[in-house]
Length: 192
Image (cartoon, rainbow, N blue to C red):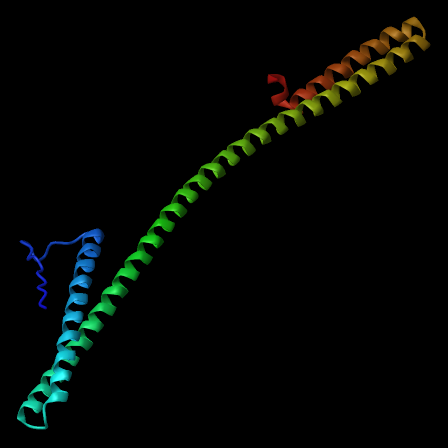
C-alpha cells in the first residue's frame, strides 16, 4: 500500500499566498501526512511481525533498525500533523478575531454618528433655551413697565389735572429711559 503525495511547485517562490490558499494547502498536507502515517503504521506492523518470526541474527538486527527508523518517521509525521492542526486552529481563531474586529469598527462608526447627532441636538436645544430665556426676561421687563404705568395711572386719577400732566410727562420720560435700558441690556431681543 503506497500513497504518493505531490506538492505542486509554484512558478514564483516569493509569491505571497492568501489565507484561504494557505488553509487549502494545509488541509492537503494534513491529508498527505495522514496517509503517510497509516502507511508507516502498516509497515511497522509488518516489520514487528517479521521481527517476532526471526531469531536474533543479523536479519533481526536489520529489521529492528528499520522499525526504529519507521518509529522516528512516525513521530515526525505526528509532530507535523499536530503543527498543521495548530495552524488550522490559529487560522480559525484569527478569522473569528477579524470578524469581531469588523463588527466593532461598524459599531464604533455608528456610535460616532449617534454622538454627532446628539451634539447637534444639544446645540439646537441650547439655542432654543437661550432664546426662551431672553423672551422671558423681556416679558418680565414689559410686565414691570405695565405695572408701573398702571400705578402711575391710578396715581394720576387721584391727583389734580395739573399735577397729572406733569406726572404723565415724568412717566413718559421714565418709560423711555426704561425702554432704552432694556434695549441696552438685551440687544438681541430687538431682533426677535
